[in-house]
Amino acid sequence: MNKQIKAVLACLAAVAVLALAFWLAFGGEKPQKTEVEQTEIIEPISEAPVEEMPKNTGDEEKKVEVPEKPGEPEPGQAPEPEAPTEAEVPGEAEAPAGPETPEEPQATAQPEQPEAPQASVCTLSISCATLLDKLDTLPASVCELVPADGWILAPVQEEFSDGESVLDILLRVTQREGIHMEYAGTAMGNAAYLEGIGNIYEFDAGELSGWMYSVNGTFPNFGCGQYFPQPGDEIRLVYTCDLGADVGDHYQG
Image (cartoon, rainbow, N blue to C red; front, side, top):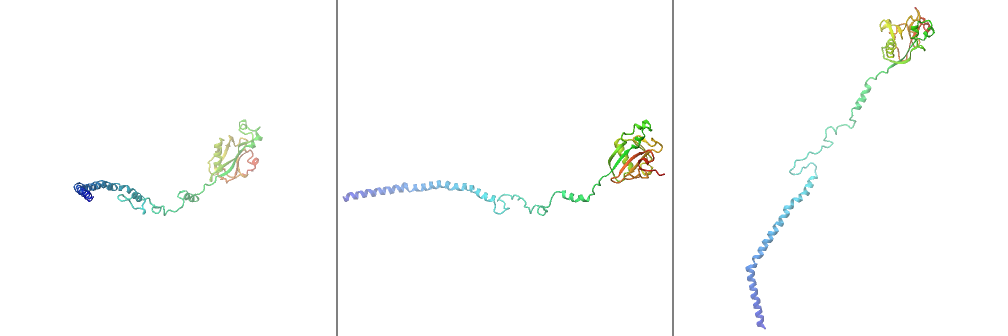
């Protein structure tokens, strides 16, 4: 029995020696090769994160896009001009908060301008009613010119300017209304004399007949070119057959 055990142990020892010799001959280099191979495989794996590192710069770029301190430019880039604040805008911070439209200065300047004067108004009328009672004594050519109611011009409101005389107003109204009018002398002063209105002349109804004018019921003793009416005056042109006695005035020579 002991011999068998010794034989087995001797076989085992021989196998072990052979295995060791085989390992030294072939197995000793293989681990080195495997280590090299593993390092070669690991190297590209270790390099991959290095290549992928720029992907993480997005976070850094985002952080740069929203800098904690305003005005700091990104590295490698020119600083972008910032929008001026209210304090940096010239004229805005110091400008008053008042209205910017130029209407208010105009409104304040308006009282300085003189107001347009209101137009003066008078009442003007032309009548030959005194001839209605003398139609049977008048020439037929004159009778045809006398209106049925005696009004050549019924009372009208007429505007006039300062410095205009009764003659100036009468000339303007008769020309506008298409009424005939004729006077002698000049339009200024006492030289103007009314000869005919509506083609009815002085002396058509006798030696004491002719045209007269009154202002507010009073007959001035000077020509109509010399009288300058006042606002509200009532001016009447009337034809008399008796030197004014039949129209409310008595002639005094």
